[in-house]
Length: 176
Length: 176
DNA sequence: TAGGCTATATTTAGAGA
DNA sequence: GTCTCTAAATATAGCCT
Image 1 (cartoon, rainbow over the protein chains, first blue to last red):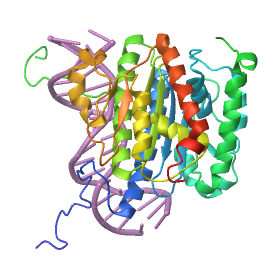
Image 2: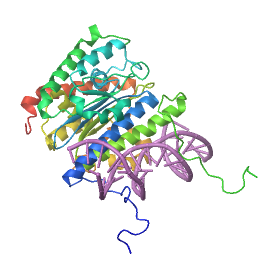
Image 3: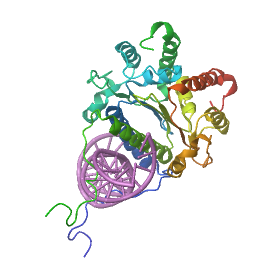
Image 4: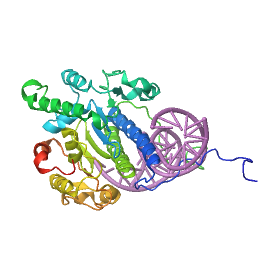
C-alpha cells in the first residue's frame, strides 16, 4: 500500500541542506553551476533595480575555471576599483567601447538573454560578443568559463587593463 | 463589512515587481541594501558549499559607496585574477595573513556572524577585523561601505595590492 | 554532463517602528 | 537611514531524462 499507489509526491521538493562543504563531487558541481547562475542573476537584478555597478569573479576549486560577471563590464568596474576613481553614474561610451574590445576575446553574453543563450550553448564557441540592450541599462554580460589553459589570455587581458589604468589620466579622463 | 473586520492580512506579503530601475529614491536604497546583503549571503554560501573563490565589488550609483565581498579575501582573488595565476585550491596561511593585514584598514565582518554583527552595528567603527572560522573554510569577510571620501584609502589599498602582485614572483611563490 | 521537474526552503516587497 | 514582520515570489535540492 505504498509502492506506487495514490497521491505519491513526484519529488521531495527542495530539501534543506546545511551550509557546509559538499563532499560528493558530482552534487558539488551541480550546485556550483546552479548557484553560480543564481548569483549572477541576483547580481543583474541588483544592477537593474538600483543602478549599481557590480563585478563578480568566481573561480571554481577543482577545474580552476574563472567566471566573471560585470556591469557595465567587469574590466570597467575593476579598473575603477584599481584606480580608486569613482567618476560616478553612467560610464561613457568611450570607456565602454574600450571595454568591449577588451572583452571581445571571451565568449560573452547579455544578462537578459541568459535563458535563451543557454539553449544554444553548443554554438557558444562561435559567438564572440552578444550585445543587446546597450542604451538603457548599459548591458550586462558574463564570460563563459576560462579554464587554466586560457590563463594566458586572461593575463593579457589584465595587462591591457593595467595599461588602461596607467593611461587613464591622459587618455580616459571622462568626467572626473 | 470590510474596514477592520475579520481576517485581515497583516501585510500584503512580498509583491511582485518588474526588474527595472526603481525610481523612488528611498525604495531603491532599501532594495539596494537588502539585495546587496542577500547577494553577499548567496556568495558566501556558494563559497562554503563548493569551495569556490569569489570576489564581488558593488558600487552604488548615487552615494558612490563601494562594497566588497571576498573569499578567501577580495585582494587575494583579485590578485590572482590580475596575475592570471590559478595556483589552485586552498590558499596558504601566508597569503591569508598578508590579506588580513591589507584588509585590516576596513571594517570587516565574518560571513557567519552577519546576523549577530548587524545588531551591534553601531559599534562598528570600533571593530577592525573579526575573524572566526579561519581553519576550515578560510574565512569570509566583507567591507563596510567606503564612501567617496575614503577613496584615498582604497587607492592605497590597491597600490599595496599591486605591489603584492609585482613581488609575487619572489615573495609569494607559494605553490605555483 | 547538462536540462527539466516539482515541492519546499529562502528571499524579499511593502509597511510599520 | 535601519530593523522587524508577514505573505507571496523566487531559488533550488534531489530526481529523472
